[in-house]
Image (tube, rainbow, N blue to C red; front, side, top):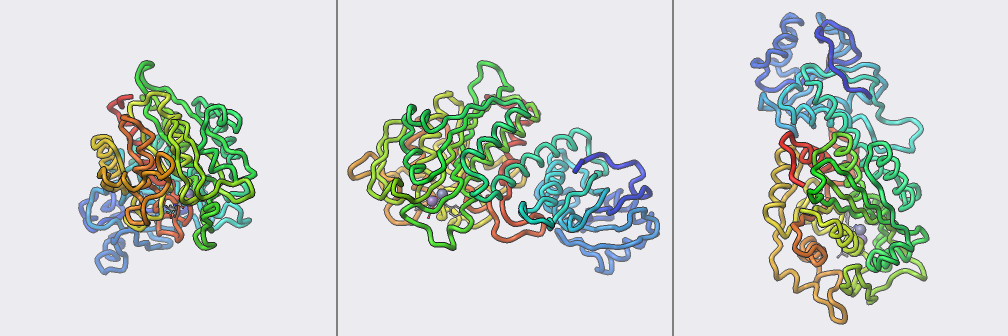
Length: 488
Ligand code: BES
Ligand code: MN
Ligand code: ZN
């Protein structure tokens, strides 16, 4: 799908579907008034009578409206505010596009989405995400992208930047949606190479023997049960000052999490192809930053493994030695993400980053705490954490902090090794997991984002298919490409 500017004559020039975003205060919108006039007041009557709803994401299709050249007019409500915040724009555009994409259209046009640059780009991303479904392997797709998507009153820069970010979100979603028999460490690496070659960031791959040489014992321990060999990928993008330290983006890339010998029940295992969402998020952000020439230096580190069972798999009671030298007692082989991340974080530290952020579908406990729509933020640095939570708020995604009081660390003290890989019992499990990770970041400002809830949806939303969501790719792509150049 190509996102382009709409013709000046957006009401009179033909297209398949004309989408119009309409708020409760539509009478203050010159654009909606123009459309109302073109229809001889017909539109206004329908809204006033309640026939057309302006509630958020409510859709009304009108066919062959006199005065409008489009074959159909699709009204999408945006609720109270006349100036749409990014999240409202994202969802309204998504809801409209999801309806449109149920069949093939050549040319669709979106009006009423002009606003702040951030909101305009959020709308583009919403539309781009909404016309791509999770049914990668279905012969007849449930959603099809229109050929052209025209935008009325959206600035050229935002068309470009919004498209780039939307494409990156869809890359992350595609990888999350790929089943584990297609996406394993080796094929994930291919995707990283392809993106790096196309968009010019450096890619370094560590295979099993290099990982052994580097003494990545925690990551290797998890990988042992699988017939797929593990990989660790390092991505480097340089867009900032050549002497400035990079920001490190670290991702959990468990391409399938069976739980290992602490085997998951069938129902919980079913969707565990999504357990590489953190790594896919890092790739999505790297790609967006590179495509947009972000003025910062980045290093991405992702650990790619499959957590399986075999005669060679790691066992309960085993002791693993992480790359940092710390020894870890295995009390639960299903707490594998933190083991993979432990070594990734230590590799990230080699680049002496100014700060680290990691993305991981790390704990069910975080989903219990915050629900399916919110990522948990845990940090050793208030400032870096609030930079992230306020960016998410600004761009319209949900991130909420969880406390990192010292006493949580008492729970992960080991009996025969330095630390153990689970807390005492399951309460506060998202935080004890974060405390484990904190053992591997030294004094570097670090924020851990537990995306176990929002990374993968079991059921569809009005604005997005179920499956991978690409959560936080937009927030970080935006944050790293702010007009005021980022430090780092
Ligand atoms: N990958 C899971 C966490 C997860 C749960 C992701 C639900 C997405 C949706 C992780 O590896 C895991 O199994 N965590 C355990 C930790 C426990 C054994 C301490 C959990 O949350 O139960
Ligand atoms: Mn697990
Ligand atoms: Zn996992």
